[in-house]
Every structure is written in C-alpha cells, then in structure tokens.
Image (tube, rainbow over all chains, first blue to last red; front, side, top):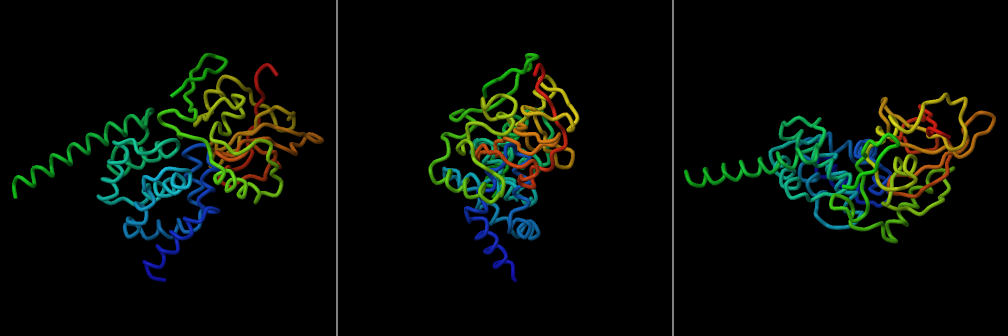
Length: 151
Length: 152
C-alpha cells in the first residue's frame, strides 16, 4: 500500500462514527490520548511521520459539534507525534485564538508547547501555552515583515 | 472555570456546559445514539442515566455528578481513605489505573462474598452505566485501588 492509500484508508476509518465516537469515552485529556492511540488507522498515520502532516491538520477543522470535536482530538493526538514547522504554526494559531474547548483545549496546549520546544509540564498549561503561542505568532509575523522588507 | 471545594477546603477546578473553555451545549440526539451504540459493545454495561457532557467519571464518583473534573487528586487527598479490596462495600470508590496513572473512577454497586461484582460509573461524555468490575474500555486500565469516602 502506498502513502496516499494509507492516508486515505486511515482517514476513512477515523471518519466512521463507531471509531471517532470512542474518543467520547475519555474523561480527561490523558485518557483521550490513550483511546486515540488504540483507534484503527492512527498508528499508520503516526508511522508516516511528517508525510501525514496534511491528514493530521485536516482533522482540526473548525466545524462545530461533537463529531468534529472527536476528529479534532484525533488530529491533536497525531500532532503530539508529527512535528513540522507547518504543524507548529497551525497549533500556535489554534492555541492563540483559543479555537478548542474542553479536553481538546489542553491537548492543543500541550501539543503546541512540545512542538515549539517549550516545557509542557507547567501547572497552568493552557494559560502558559496561550501566552507562548501569542508570542510565537508575534515573532513569526515580525520575521515575515522583515523578510518582505529585505526583498 | 468554576471552583468546587473538597471537605478540607481545597479548591478543585471543573467545568459546566456553557463555560468559556467547555462545550457550548450537551450531546444532541445523534451524539446520544452514537454513544449508546459504543456502550452497547460492552457485554455487561447497562445504562442507568443518559449520555451527557454535564459530568464525567471523577465528577460522578467524588462530587455526586456536580460537573466535569479533569483531576481527582484533590478529592483523593482530602475526602477518601484507601482500604483493601477484601473489605469492599457499596459506595466505595474504585480507581482504575494504567501505567500507574489514574484513568477512571467508579462507585462500587454490588459486592458478593467479598468480591466486587458490579460498579456504577460515568463513561466520559457517554452514559452512566452499571457494569462488571473489569468490563471497561482498555484505556481505563485495571481496578487497582479502592477507597472509602470519609465518614461513611
């Protein structure tokens, strides 16, 4: 099976309600991570590493509702294992805008901190991550402006 | 984020539906139906209360379903005392652990000949169910510690 087929099969599996609704068995972010790890298709995407970046990000869509929320939990699990400059920027954006709620808020915070190289063992993880994500956004914006000016 | 206090006055953060950092609304009919389909896959599980995001397992076991609590440690520190499984009785709280970390909490429902036969617990955002001690999702781990609410 090639990469495209692996990704397509994994996403099809994750999109089935009987699969992604299992996330709702989690009472805490920690258990959500354990449950996602056991879902069909997830190990295959993690094994692809950065090649599964697009698939992971596609699960973070901003739709409302529990189904979208479940899929976002799976996407955030993947982003704890797939770290690229693009995923770091996407997480910084989501965390700084406080895109997620409930369990996903803490998962996004810890994924961003790990991805950007900050310690993820803070007592108030979400507040710390939000502050660092906004700093990250601001620095990135300044760098972009500088590179445009020098062109 | 709202605050709830242990018997020793320790504040415990938690969520209610509508809180800024929590879900805007409870499960809709589709969510309830999908949740029930998953719970139905566990042979012993019998629903005793509808699937809801109003409270989770720790909130159910330690606060009479007051809200959604991501951490149970303050309650474990202040409100309960560890006892041997051989002394189990209804109302005790079972801690399910995996890799030595707390994953799930449930209340002992039935004890037969000194052995816990049924537990009542809230499965994340799904239903509150009565189930066999070991018939839970593998991510919940195993029933490893039993505690009794102080003063009971």
